[in-house]
Amino acid sequence: MILILDLKFVSFLQLTFFLTKSYIDIGQTAEAIKLQIDYTDLILLAGLLISIIMAVAIGTKAQKQTANIWLVGFFVSSATVIIVKFLYTSGYILDSPHWFKVNYPAGILRPLFMYLYIHFLLQGIQKIRTSTFLHFIPFILLTLYLSDFFLQSEDYKIAVLKRDVVNTKGLIPSWYAYFQILYSTVYLILIFLDFRKFTLTYRKLTKSQKTLKKWIRLLLVGGGAYLSFIVVARLFDLTTDYNHHFYEIFSILLILLCIKLLTLPEFVDNNTLLREKYKKSWLNASSIDQYFSKIDQLMKNEDLFRKEDLKLKDIATKLAIPEYLISQIINEKSGLSFRNYLNAFRIKAAQEMLASSRDQYSIEGIARDVGFNSRASFYTAFKKETNQTPTEFLAALN
Image (cartoon, rainbow, N blue to C red; front, side, top):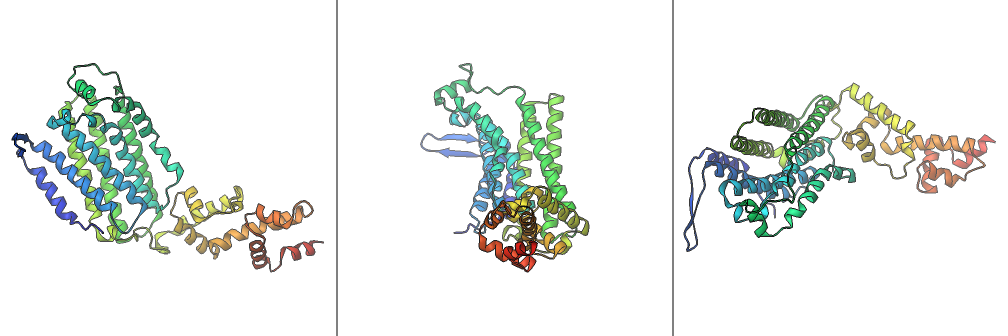
């Protein structure tokens, strides 16, 4: 069942919470314990609510899109960090000590997930490659480093929080804060590079693309401003509390930016953002020539055509552009389909091998060497390309 949410109402609700400066008394059981939640806690709870709602809403969309996997990850990691922050500021971390330090590995995932989301979205990538998971190495290393502490008992963690014992497990070094800044900066730069390629590649944007362009520009400006503040805060030794509050406010503003994008019907409800195939106005002549030249170089210099199961996505990955554009570029520059374009290289190579090594290799061996997976497909392609069969071609050489 598809979860339908009025995200604009949720956004309004969050802003209402954000502007509320008060506390809430919540009665709990017969003990009448009261939780006092000030406006800072309300900000955290509002951010938590939005993160959970967005993760569920995106995760249950009927229309699947690979990029959304990373967006769900971003909201889940954001919700995790906010939970820990709330427990700290409200003092209830002692009641849930196992959340202690979970914000470190969760926090390092947020810039990564946002980068992967934008990268997959702009590039139109639908399949997650193994190399993508290399980005998770810092997260894995950090989690392993903290695992000794995570596996400790609840009593030990409470004792550490109360400073009854000196903790020696999973200590966060002082330089880690600077690593986080550098780490986030790297992924902000990667987002900028993807964004720059997107703006240079497409000359005339659709309505959805224009909206996406504005949103990513806001994301870059906001991310740059936040990182600049953190650097200034470190240099001038601003108070930890001020830094903490600003960080949480920024986190919620970032979530609101995501909601702003996701409330657009043409973005949420279909996959046409980057898939209005063969819109020739998207690519200018210079871009088409440039990419076609690169494709030709891959075929000639790297013998990429010899790969038996070569697909559009393999070339798209090497050139870092959406695979459907590869088909358009080849079609416009050569007048051939991708399969015929590929076979032209294979048959040319086969002709050269037949001419120079006719006594060394069998026809079937040559067919496999140039990328064909069967004798029949080789003969069909050879006949189509040369109006001769391989046997007839050999006979003509004698």
